[in-house]
Image (cartoon, rainbow, N blue to C red; front, top):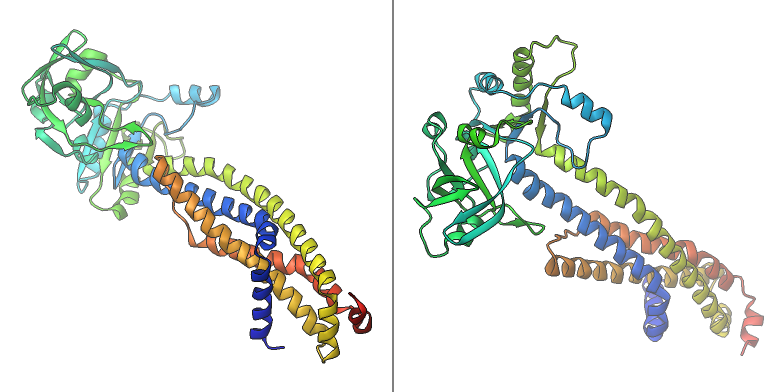
Length: 413
C-alpha cells in the first residue's frame, strides 16, 4: 500500500469514530495541554521578571554595589553573621566607584534596607504606606525616572539638605487629583516637605505598584530616618555590553577602598538584574522538575488507552483484515496500517493538546497579571510526544493484526 492510502485510511477510521477517538485521546490532550500551558506561563514569568521587576528595581544597563547580596527570601544564621560583619557602603566608596568609571552614564547613591514607610498627608487627605528613599541626583538617571511635573532632586538639594520631595505618580494622583502638586507642602509624620516633582507612572507589576514612593535628598533623608544599614551605590552604563567591564572596574575600586588583599574575600556585593532573574529561575526549575512526572503519568495512561482501543479495533475489523490478506496484502502492510492509525490518533491528540494549552495560557494572561509566552520547543515536544506515544503503544496491536491467519479472519463474523 502507498503511504497516501495508509494515511487516508487511518484518518478515515478516526473520522468514522469521532467520539470514541476523542475519549481515547483525552489523557494525551490533557497532558500535552498541561505541558504547553505551564511552560508558557513559566517562560512568560521569566521574561516578565527580567523586563519589569528586575529592571524596575535595579535599572537597565545597570548594576549595584551593595553591602548585602540580593536574595529573595531570608538569610540563614551563618549567612547573616557573615554579611553583618561587612562595613556599610559609604559616600567615599561611591566616589571611588565614580572615579573608576568615568565613562558611566550615572553613579548614584540610594538609601537601602530597611526602607521606611510613611503616611503622606496633604490637608485632609492621606496616602498610607508610601516607601521613602533618600537619593543623590544620578540615581534618578539610573532608574530611568521621567518627570511628568516639576523637577527631580538636584545636587543643591543634597548639599543644602533642603526640605523637598519628589513623589510617585500614584501618590500625586491620590493626594491632589485636579490640583497642581508642585509647590504644595506635604507632611511625613511631623516633617513638612515641599513637593518639587512628580515621577511619571511606571505602572504595576503583578499587582504591585511601582508608583507609590517618595524621593528625598539623601542628606535630608538621613536627618529624618538615620543612615541605613545597606546604603547602595547604583551605576548605569552607556550600553549593556559595558556592564561586565564596569562591574570589574567597580570591584577593583572597592577592593582598594576597603584595603583588601588579593586573596581576601570581598566584603561587598556587586549585583545586576540577573541576580533576581537567576533566583527566579531557580524557583521555576522546581516546577520544571515536576512537569515531566505529571506529563509522563498522563501520557502513559493515554498510551494504554490507545493500545486497548486499537486491540478492540483489531477484533472489530478481523474480517476486513482477512479480506485484505486474501487479495494480496502482506503482513507488513497490515502492520503499517494499524501503526499509522495509532500514530495519527496520538499525533491528533498532541495537536489538540497544543491548541488547548495555548488557549488556556492566553486565558490566564487575559484574566490575571500572569503573562504567558508559548515557546516553539514546547510545541514541538508536545507533537513529538504524541507521535512517540502512537509508535510505542501502537506496535503491539499492529503486530497482532498482522499475525492474524487470513482463513480464520475470513470466517469471523
